[in-house]
Image (cartoon, rainbow, N blue to C red):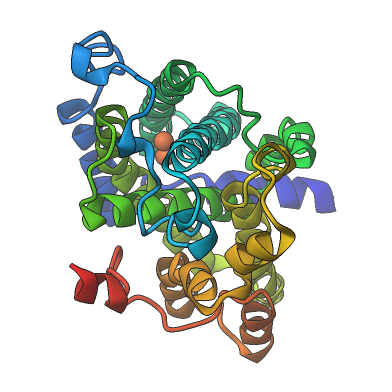
Length: 337
Ligand SMILES: [Fe+2]
Ligand SMILES: [Fe+2]
């Protein structure tokens, strides 16, 4: 009996056709995907001479917005070494991005499998899946061209990756928070690099510009999805979720942002530098906090902030002011610009 009630509630949660505003937003997002989309092989001219990856190219030196790029240890390295580290790092970020996207694709299709006929969520989930498939090809092409044999995520997460998308069907709300935990940090870092305006390799620049343009819709969808569901949770569910959200954010962000063991070994980077970077130095801490301003805003506005949740946000070191609007640049970036 209890089980059928649970299944009924689960199915009812997927019924969204009676919410005109939500349906309208999803239609707008889907139409956006039709109007403005990219193909990794027609929108990037991989074979043009300016896209060639050549040795000794200063444009691979990490920008100042990258935590490694702005560290005095990195800046004191010889130029060739800075280029090598820069290429490895940027290839690995792309690899992590595509691995995360594969997890997301698996989860979105698991969710879409159960969506009832006529729901606008089906179409949007599939648009997002198509876009993410294109991103994975674009990122892999970039990794191949850079030529560094990078592993991407830490080994532990690679092994766990087949299981994460399984929760998307039965527990879509934690899954969509997980989506934000990956998309927000990647998008935040890419936007910061583009805003900084340093000369980047054209591959990096083009790939990031395409990615940021399409990610905006994906992040909107995750926010809208959660905003629609969160008000209907029971008090107990809301409380449970409120203190788990910061943990999901911190754990996934850590796995995505911190380079894997092989990076530190390959370039023989001192432990103290690693500690500074992730996340002992005040700038690194600020960088970590800034990534989640939009998620804090979402939690504030949907009743997921209570004294205990606040404490967990603080313990995870990602507490702070919520954004006033989505994608609000952190203050120091505006000053730098
Ligand atoms: Fe993506
Ligand atoms: Fe995405």
